[in-house]
View 1 (spheres, helix red, strand yellow):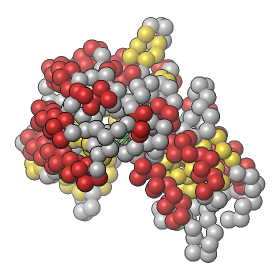
View 2 (cartoon, helix red, strand yellow):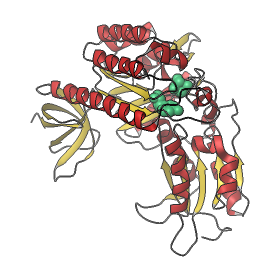
View 3 (cartoon, protein in one colour):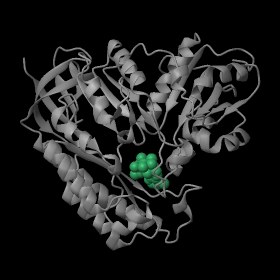
View 4 (cartoon, helix red, strand yellow):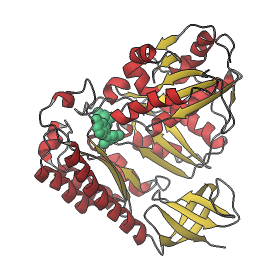
Length: 440
Ligand code: 5AD
Ligand code: SF4
């Protein structure tokens, strides 16, 4: 493609969190609405959108190596657009460092992507990293098709300012999408084939709006309303902050049958001094008490979390507190990361840099404990019977893959279709999946 022809095919590559996956889908829909077609798997695309993540340094480096890899054998490149949080944080630098990038668009402005691509096709590089309070969502096309499990962004941004985190700077202040818009989008997703909807937000449980009668409503109320959509079978939400886990939401886990028994509730550390330095508003004890209440409402709930090891100043003894907390909780799964200093965040200039070898060792020990608990959680599911939402074909002939209510991957042989909810006996559990047998 020369610089002055409009692209006809596109590919969107999303990195990082599920919110980026949602944004990537919406960008695809926008481009399709302009008459462009998604490039076939493996085929060359005229336009490539790199929808980037800025949360850790490695994620940022990946963008530059990906830009390099897009160069074709004949030396040309597709029209490259960088979207997402790296675009927001480092837009100018990308434009200066990577001449092949023609469009830089932040997460709050991607409804303008088609116009910007058109400009770039005329030879003018385009940058848009404003964070307008006005919602981009209204400017996006209506949802049409969806897989069995769909994402729905209900809340964006973060006001918590954990001292290590770039999100408040890249995604901006917390905003909640209006109730009515979400109910409408959920219905469209279900009409388009979704049986499960995962509500997304950086602080999804801080979502707040007004219902049709103007009364204040929170995430539990939204989940209750969505549960009324007949063909919607499952509702999930992620990611939550302990400070926003209100009574109504905890209670909903015991009363809303469509709300799945799974909660991703990051704790980050098990040590109170580190938690204070991180500007988390909870202690290890208040977090554990909160989980007790969640478990009282829904005893079989699967718990998940995020951890950071090697936060500035973290001592061996403080790290041991994290291992103790892990033992106390018994997570069904969790994510753990080495601390990565992010420019512009308060923690980046804190004293007490933890050496890489110490971080490596702590991460290994933490992950060994988390893997042990994940396997134990899966093993404890052996012998249970549960509905599995069929998501895709497996590697073997006749094999299908789906998810249990506790978000475990289940594989089984059966004559089913994508989107079916199948009753399955869970037979043999491994660390990452469970072999099952459907009832015939
Ligand atoms: N370094 C390492 N991990 C981080 N996270 C956020 N910022 C950083 C950072 N600077 C982790 C937190 C968060 C998850 C999405 O990423 O655990 O919950
Ligand atoms: Fe980042 Fe903390 Fe906000 Fe989560 S709650 S997005 S870790 S600042």
